[in-house]
Image 1: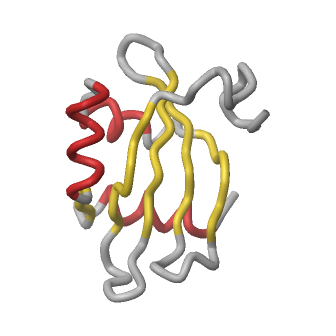
Image 2: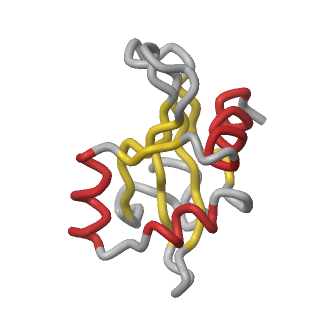
Length: 106
């Protein structure tokens, strides 16, 4: 498991997280509930890790919403503030781009 994944879980559990403006727009546009994102974090599955992102390490996670639709959430830990996790973006993965396990890109 990724160190970033564990750090995001720890920060969110401690209440040290914020959604970006971009993530808030995507939640509204895609009708994804923040509660589903947060509830799914404990059972989320690692998809991709970006430890060298110049903005700060980030990780793409898979979880499922309350209607059992897959959700991809990109969480980041900014370089300027290592004590917070940011929800960067959120979306339902496109079956044209992802295999049915929602973990592997086509």
